[in-house]
Every structure is written in C-alpha cells, then in structure tokens.
Amino acid sequence: MSELYCKAETMELRRKHIGPSCKVFFAKDPIKIVRAQGQYMYDENGEKYLDCINNVAHVGHSHPDVIKAAVKQMELLNTNSRFLHDNLVQYAKRLTATLPEKLSICYFVNSGSEANDLALRLARQYRGHQDVITLDHAYHGHVSSLIDISPYKFNQLGTEGKKEFVHVAPSPDIYRGKYREDHPDPASAYADDVKKIIEEAEKNGRKIAAFIAESMQSCGGQIIPPAGYFQKVAEYVHKAGGIFIADEVQVGFGRVGKHFWGFQLQGKDFVPDIVTMGKPIGNGHPMSCVVTTREIAEAFGASGLEYFNTFGGNPVSCAIGLAVLDVIEKEDLQGNAIQVGNYLTELLNKQQEKHPLIGDVRGIGLFVGVDLVKDQQKRTPATAEAQHIIYKLKEQRILLSADGPHRNILKFKPPMCFTMEDAKLVVDQIDELLTALEEATGARTGNGKSSTSQHKRKVCFLFGVLKK
Image (tube, rainbow, N blue to C red; front, side):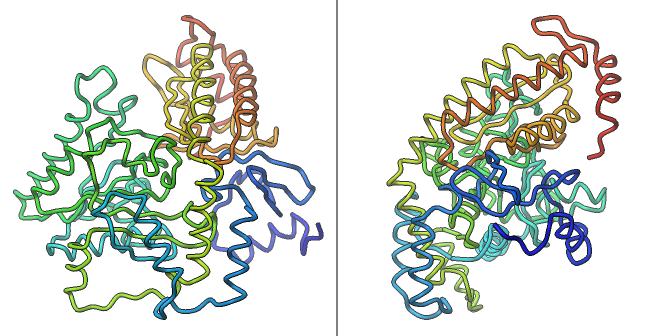
C-alpha cells in the first residue's frame, strides 16, 4: 500500500503540527498503522499485529457489515439531526430495548466525553444540586467538566487539581484497596465510605447532584466492584437527592459476556438513573449516547434551555449503530466473550500459580486485568516489569497496554471477535517473558522469592529508571 510519507516523515510532521501533549502508544518506538481487519492491525511494511486493546473496534476492525451500512446511508443522506429521520428513532428503540424499562429516553452525542458532560448537566438540573462524588483513579473524559471529576487526570495537577464540589470515594478494589478479599462485606464497607462523604458534604452545606462510576473501572486498573456495592451507593445517593450515573463508555455492548451492560453484573435489583456510552457504540465511528429516565429528561427540559446536537444521532451514525447491534447478535459476540474470556482467564490463572510476578488476575468476559507485583505479600506494584512486557510483546507483534494508578496492570480489552487461539498466543508469550524476567531479577517460582530491595536493584539495572 502506497503511503504519503515514510514513517520518519510522519513522525516529523506530527512533532511539527500536533500538540505535544497528544501522546501515541509505545512512544519510545511508535507503530504506524495503515489498515486493520478483525482483531488484526497492519503497519506500513505489512507486518500484522494482534490487537488486544482496541475496545473501540468492538465488532472487529473494518467490519464489512458496518462499512456497508455507513456507505449505503452516506450515499443517500446525511444531515442535521433536527430533521425527522427513521434511523434515529429506530436506533433509540433498539438501544433502549437492551436496558431496563425505566431507561427509555436517549440523547445522542459524538463521544464518550460529550456523553458524560451531558450526564452531569442532566444530574445538576434534576434537583439543582451541584456536587459530584467520583471514585479514586477514575477517568470519565477529556473536557474540562470531566477532568474536574477524574482523579486519574486531576491528581497530576497536584493539590490544586481537586475542585471544592468534587468528592473522591475509594475505588472498590478488593485486591489492592482499602477493603480487600478477606473482608466479610467489602461492598457494604466501600458503600459506607460514600455515605460518610455525603454526610460530611451535607454538614458543610453542600448538595450531592450525582455519584458517577464506570461499571468496571478501566484506567483505574480493571477493577470489578463487589456485588451489591452499587445498590447500597444508589440508596445513599438517592436519599441525598442525587442520581447514579453508570459510565459504560469502556465496558458496554456485551463485553462482559453474560450481560449486555456492565452494571447488570450487580444484579437485577440495580438500575442506574443515567447510562452513558461511547467507544464501541459505533465501532470506531464517532458517536455516543446518554440514556436516562423520563422524569430526569423532563426536569432537564423544564429549564427552558433547548438542547440540540448538530451531528449527534445523524442518519449515518444511527445506521452504523444499528449495524453494530446486528453484528453483535448475528455473530453471537456476547457468547464469544464468555467462551474466550473464560479461557483467557483460565490460562492467566495457571500463569499466576507459576509466576511470582503475577499478583492477581481479574476479569469478566473480554475485560481482563493482570496485576503485576514485585512482592506477592506486600503487593508492591511491578511498574517497570509491566512496561517491559508490553514493549517486548510489541516486538512479537502483539499489542497490549499497561494502566492503573501504578501502570502495572496488563489490560485486555480486545475486539469482540478475539479467539481462543489469540488468547493462547498472548498468554504463551507472557509466560516466556515472565520466565525470563524472573530469571533475570532473581525472583523464583514457588514460595521462594528474592528480597524486594534486591529485586528493585536488578530491575533498575535491566530497564533503567522508569518515568511515569
């Protein structure tokens, strides 16, 4: 395939014209991707990479059914969404059919950030409250209103980053968090912390507009909240006059396998007041949605301020969204997420028994995290090792990422067409890399382990000092 520029020229033009804060994957040696298909991406030299991280290409890169739907509608009409069009109402009907009955009103927008920003507006208009409770390490988007409620971002700004109207609750992480797997009821314990935050805010004359959380925290470290946590939090938030926003931008549309939405893992008795979605909704096409109750929607309309979105819900976007829903159903991608996700987790659990560098394996469906540690007892994050592994995997043409507060969590969020063969290939490579790392650093399999200080000196010698 002929390219306009060679890789070096592309990089030079990027340095010249693109903002320096706009980072790329594998910044030490970035990849130039020129095409993709299914779960594979190809560079300018035709090298094929297995994509384990692209939750945007939900049903697979360049899916023919999605492309066909987009082209067909684009040839016919694409226009402002303030005109009547059947695609908009048909898609809203299909989308809300996947949700609990009370979640029936849609607002279509263009990105996950825009969806979460609108959700905050809906919440604040509902009762006139302003304050927001968010989870530690949370990320909800890149616009100003969302940086304000994303500790993953605002903590980088130091003590001045957190605004007065933002309250940060502990992440419900039962491996590394405040209440762990040995706690008799971590769901209630973490929820009680939210209750205390509400009580303290009210003492100070503040009013809670919303509690917002990803149904499973992604950037926060692939965290799966303990069952019952959301129900208890919702009870406390509702009592305070606030609403519960479930952010499904990263994890929705069947990724968890057994359910279409991540929040449904909490049980049938939990229904959020607002659900936001993005990334997988359009398989890479820029579209997103906010779904809420009629009561909240009517309160938003009662402000007298008209809401419209020029591109949100346009005919082409809705045609693409419909095609994505069709492919999920036709190809049984939820079933695939269960089968392949279970197999991937099983393989990783076997590696955990073998490798002292693996502290925890957690995941549901095709949303899986591997927590790497220097010391299994102390659970010391193995940040340098995680970075080393993702770069070595890249050399083997496998794309994986590391994230979490300490950048030590290997994150699996592949396209939903990921196969059992793909899973085995990645885990076999991780096994080889961990074996080599443990031999190089002196960590041993079984119960014997090198001391943390000795281990740290060897890692620094091998990889240099890692900057976050």
